[in-house]
Image (tube, rainbow, N blue to C red; front, side, top):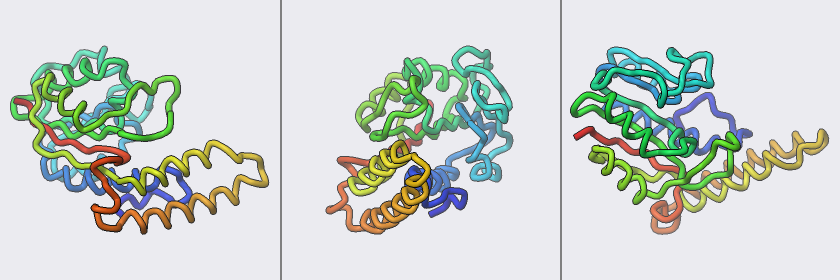
Length: 221
């Protein structure tokens, strides 16, 4: 697993590591000027820095962003970026089509969109948590906004999805002082055990039916 910053007692360790490893692969498609939409504290910059010429992160909620503003409201020149990175953002936007339309506009012709979106997961960033996506809805959204998918992959499977939901449930409960630390130990045990079982053959784990997440690489037509 690639993300050395994630810890086994964190309920989202497995999905963090899956995203990290898949972004390492997707970095081979990155080029030129990159815009990171909803960049947070820029955790993925180090993956892409040697593949691109420049990097700009935009996020209205994070002080570490280069542009501290709402992507949908701020003016950005059309055809000005070669690559857009957008990780775990689409579910928090009231109108995903509007977001993808703007991403398409700021990308140059043949520009690359690298995006991750959830299929399953507990509510987070409440109340701004609106959607979960299937691979079919992702395909439709991207087709409508002028993108052609060149790569899509399920992240996780039945087993890792069960682990993810179980650990987030535990994280949100049993928070009285005496239970807080034993709960962390239980999360570690569950995640490690389910991670091992998630490595079973795909005919058993069925990633196509119940992944945690998707990663998509698409090109602007």
